[in-house]
Image 1 (cartoon, rainbow, N blue to C red):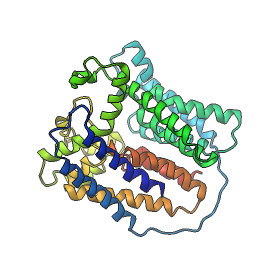
Image 2: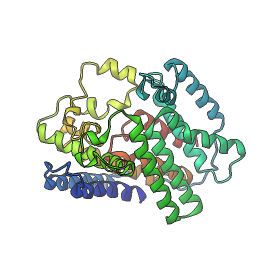
Image 3: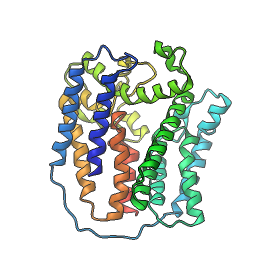
Length: 356
């Protein structure tokens, strides 16, 4: 199954890149521990793949575009823009003190993100689109740029590529070109999205060209989360602090509910163990480690395997392909952060199963 390849390949690539270490930024990390954690993550995943899930009959249903929901999405975007006092792209251009984290209505923003992803997936997998549908797809494709939301932008690109492969067949030249263009765009967004300049921490980049800086952003985006996780584990070889729900599952709750229930807990203590200050994420497994130690990493990885089982046993072929495209993003992004247990992803998963 493609999700198996995505999950395993993502983590193996990270391990290899950490070993290469062209900027000597990870010299303090014991590579034996890198291999140990990779084995824990991959073995946990395949353990989850062995867990039983219901096998259903295969049926085919006609794909619907759900254009009617596009008007709902536009209305919600307008509502959030009014509530937030503008749009992140405008704040960036005008030099406003506001940032992308200030955008959105608390409690509603997760649903808006889920609806945006759902609409794009639905449109991407429709073979024949009318003019209205093509315009809607283009608008949703560029929407994350307006919101300065790399996660949804990445989701859209992955969905677009995967849907093209499913509809038109594999074209390796196109995949390579698209991947290179995407890496450049991703690096550029890294440069403009923050005031931090990567050369401040990496001596080798003091007099680097823009191409070298873009490459370095991509490299450190891919490797620093795992390095941060390892650095955190080095300094926190302790038993769980809060229990399994408060860390690993906190993202399921809408932000107002989360703030109300979990306000007493401090979830930011991982930031002080950043290897490079500009990169503050620590893979999908930092929170499970906080809850249950290395066992938490194994269990959470098993959830990815169980998730892959659910998709592989999906009865509707068209729905299965859409869920796979969503899963490719969730599995690939596991080297950065945990979107498996997040409100937008879960809402989108439900919508793809129920509203197709």
